Image (cartoon, rainbow, N blue to C red; front, side, top):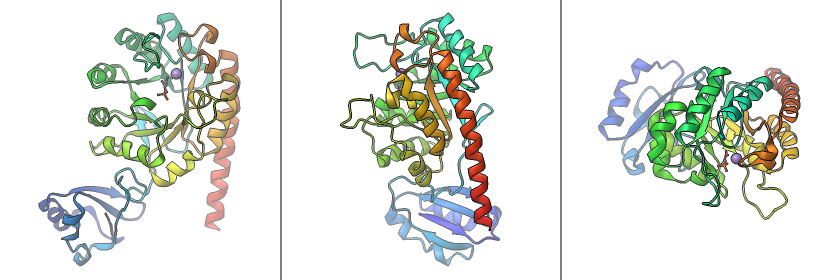
Length: 346
Ligand code: PEP
Ligand code: MN
C-alpha cells in the first residue's frame, strides 16, 4: 500500500502517522517524490486494513499495491533510482558501459582487457573469478587471486569492478574487491543469496534468470530491496526460447517494460544475449535505442584463445568500432528524450 501525502506536507509533520504504522508492527519507507512525499507501507495486508489512513489530515490518497513486489515497483517510487557505483552514476540518463572478459585468466590478460575497456570509453571492468560453468570439468575461475588481479587492473585504468558471486561463502571476499556484485542468471532465484548480498549494501547487478519471467525477476530484486539495499541494476541477458540459432533470445522489450514497472536502472547484455560476436554490436545498438541505462559486454585481447565465451567476445578493433556507434546513438537518444520533453510541455 502507498500513501500519497498532500502537496504541502513536510517530513516533520509525519510523526503521528509513522508512529501509528510502527506501533502496528508494519514497515514504512519515506520517499520524496517530485512534488510530494509518498509513504510505502510493508507488512500483513490484514493489519494494514485496520488503520484508517484516510482519517489523517496529511493523507491525500491511499493506493493499494497489488503486486507481490512493492519496494521494487514504480508505484512505490515514481522517480528513477540512480545507482552510484563509487562515483559512476547509473540511471541518470547517461549510458554506462561495463566491458571485460568473461573470465579473469591471468594478470596480463586482465590488464590488457582493462586497457581496451578504458580505450573504448567503458567505466566499469567486468570479469568472472567465480564462474558458473555448465560442465564441472570446465574452468571454474581463479577465485580470490583473480579478484586481486582484476582490482589491480581496474585501478590502474581508473575503472570500477563488477564481478559475480555464486554462493554465500564468497560474499565477503567478493565484496572486498568489487564495486558491483553480480548475481548470475543461474542464481536469480537463489533467495538466501539475494538476501545475503542485499545486506552488503553494495550495488547489485541482478541478471535475469535463463527462464525468468518479468514478475519473478522483479520479485528477486525485492529480496535485495527488503534488506534496505536500493542499489539494484537489472541486467537483461537473454532468455531461453525454442530458438537455438542464437545462444539466448535477447528480450529487448523487457527494457522499457522493466523501466515502466520498476524504478531501478536496466542494463543490456548483448554478449550472453546472442552468444555470437558479430551479433553483439547490432544488439548493443538496439539496447541503446530501447532506452537501457547501460550495457555489459564481453571483450578479450585474443577471443580465439579465451578460456570461456570466446565465441561471443569482441576483439579490440570490433569493440572500439561498437563503442563509436554506441556513442553516436546515445547522443541521438538524448535528443529524442529532450524533444519528447518539449512536446509534452507544448
Ligand atoms: C557472465 O556474465 O559471464 C555470466 C556467466 O553470465 P550469466 O549469468 O548471464 O550467464
Ligand atoms: Mn560469459
